[in-house]
Image 1 (spheres, one colour):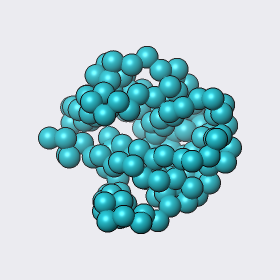
Image 2 (cartoon, helix red, strand yellow; image 1 turned 60 degrees about the vertical axis):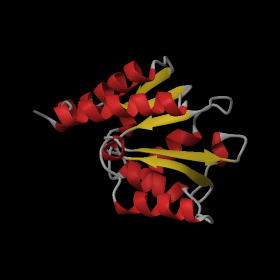
Image 3 (tube, helix red, strand yellow; image 1 turned 45 degrees about the vertical axis):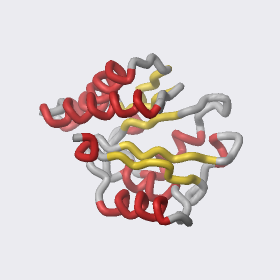
Length: 157
């Protein structure tokens, strides 16, 4: 079986459902989701949205499959300005590298702890919530975001 067609294992399915419930509790509902076309990312998104009880616009993009973080950033910058919040569903190491690149150095102890946790391990199914002050997606640059939350599936067990 080719990697693109590989589906989620049981642990991945449970993680997606857990994250969807957590996102619903935190009111992290996206307006738009950019999702890789791989079988496992599509399945992750489907399981997450069932629990989140949301129906955002979804764009499946082949260019997000196993891509490097600068190309993920290009996809973010191409989003129409009025669209927010945005969620990306993709693959490591690109997703981890993008999250690390986008966040500015934290000033608070809590922010530093979140950033440290993100830098230690960005496991499959993790969620990084990053806030940007700019008025448009075109202005998103490395170091321009604030890490508001970082949740790993194991944190929800």
